[in-house]
Amino acid sequence: MIRKKILIMGAAGRDFHNFNVVFRDNPNYEIVCFTATQIPGIEGRRYPPLLAGKLYPNGIPIEPEENLPELIKKHNVTEVIFAYSDVSHNYVMHRASIAMASGADFKLLSAESTMIPSTKKVISVCASRTGCGKSQTSRKVADILKSMGIKFTSVRHPMPYGNLEKQICQRFATMEDLNIHECTIEEREEYEPHIMRGNTIYAGVDYGVILRNAEKEADVIIWDGGNNDLPFFKPDLEIVVVDPHRSGHEDHYHPGETNVRRADVIVINKMDSAKTTDVDTLVKNIKSLNKDAIIIKANSKITVDMPEKIKGKRVLVVEDGPTLTHGGMTFGAGTIAAERLGAGKIVDPRPYVTGRIKETYEKYPKIGVLLPAMGYSPKQVKDLETVINTTDCDLVIVGTPIDLRKIITINKEAVRVEYELDEIGEPNLTQLIKKMFSI
Image 1 (spheres, rainbow, N blue to C red):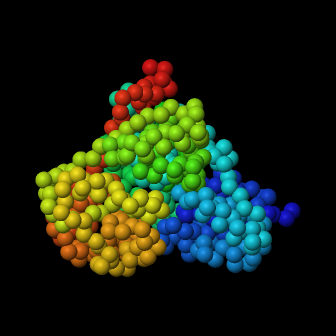
Image 2: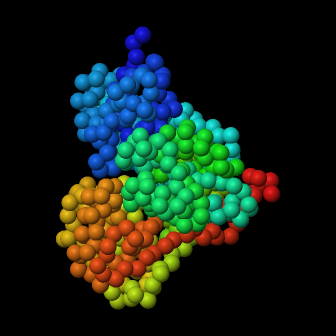
Image 3: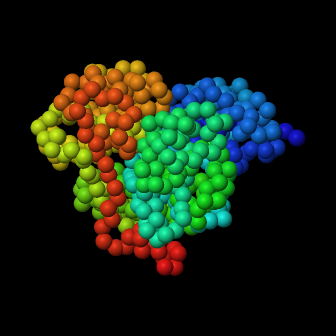
């Protein structure tokens, strides 16, 4: 039998999941390679035999996406599967054009084709874009379940940027687990807030294995989404977070629009820092895409550990990396704190950038005067530390989901910004979750 030759375009997440649930051990297909983008340094590896299955005794190569036309021709690829997230519809169709011009079909796999059913109830939290506030919404859901006395665990969208065999199924319950699994800054940003609340969270590469393990210790699984990707598990309640600062993006980005159209509940976050006109536009757009979704409005409540330090100071603002890069935001919680608390000036770090951080600015020039907390590798973390310590400023505002002061050595005074979901009126998530459990 002639096997159909497939190339999967990805970014070390959705691509591996699609392979695991649709293509692994399927004799009708031959996956010739994955391509990788978005995350620096993840190409050049192999998807290992242990994960790839019996049809791939040597594993599967992971190639740079920029080589897509050559790879299609070299391997006589008949079909390209696009499998990563938080990109514009225009971007997706450009990749489709490259694939089709090179002689291959172009395909997207639906949520229904790739979601794994659970024996337990699943609440998913996804978004229309990176940086809408999924993590704080997931934490809110966890707090509600805990207050109801329901056993739960969270499962995070994959971030397997290291040794894939060691990352098949990871469980995080203590701070030491973060060190054991050699977590990047991005991983710590997602896991640490759960651990600090006394909760467990799973992640990794093989989400079938992960789900079976999570089901052993929970009655409810929280799918804690990444980027604006679709859920990997079939949800009983599908929550999608949207951002009024980016009104109009909800029907212009993949697969965020799919999430909005699928949602049972849509949370409009950041109301306290958004323009009324942008909120009105967003509500109108939501209703045109999904008239049946329940809309919840919320603030992203910002607190600073030492607010009195900011007034009048020349500040370096460090924000969440992915939110500024492929999320496309030009500000974050740190910026809002600087403005509200009267910082004298936001200092531009670009004259001081070096190494991997410099590469980030070259790839994402719209970042501007903010510093993205990029830390996908030890080298990048060291470069981040160097930029912070050489930038001429009075104070560092850490606007990342974790306290960077615990990860790197900062040679000047620094304050920490935190943010939590603060719902406005009714309906609210507590009511909906209690209804889900008939309480």
